[in-house]
Length: 361
Ligand code: GLY
Image (cartoon, rainbow, N blue to C red; front, side, top):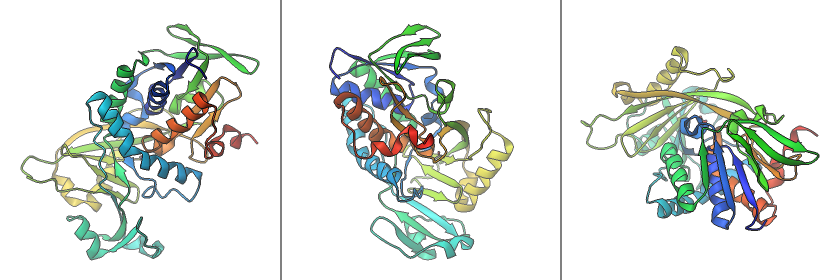
């Protein structure tokens, strides 16, 4: 691709913005169309960078996750230098507590990347754990970022670099002719570009017949009272079906349900009850902290829970959708692979594993 050609990114979530910034940094002329910046899944996420705690099986997805986790410090540092804003990347490690009933499934395969801690040892890493916690795994290389701040940083970086950003644009239809995309029809008229990137997350199926569907996650946050001089929780806790993420600004984020209910909005009593009980079982001190906020979001899910990346049936349309639970984690690696492909016509060795045809052949 050369500098006279233009790229139109459809979707202003974390994947769309990260790709736009990466392409712009490489010299492309980039426009991003966003329907509603606030509804992007990354706003609703927890920001864990947890390829290991998420227990991704050995696979190209794990490789992509490890690659992306390794990119994070340099990538967020670069964004910070560009914008003067911090995304609060925090290499705090993740503890994965296990209850008595789960102990028998724990294999003793300790390595520098995953260390088994018994009942006493886990409490030296984090005090105040619930009495049911019988041990757990320590993943020292897993980390976190404040996903909401990251979204602001990305938006600012895109503005700073001269990416054209349009908010409030509803895409109605991708117009195609033979094996090319010819234009995009939207609530604000038609748009044309040399190349298009589809990064529309859980909403992608409305535009293209791809197997991406929403999985709702409910979350809530508490705040550590000012009466506590130190942050009482300094590790992410990732227990069975629940995670608790302390932020450096005293907020503690708790998530998340995983519900197949289409795009049904709102928090529900059942969803919140599950989260509250799970969180208090692992970290009882949290039961006294004031609740700040409850919210929900929609993860873009594929049948194998890995993203769809790379070419599409249309030569000038690239896909970057379906990141499921791992959009925040996978954003920098996704952008690198996609920019390599679009800008340099270079296919990274990992890219073919994520091709859409794995669901069609
Ligand atoms: N990344 C965790 C979640 O989607 O709940």
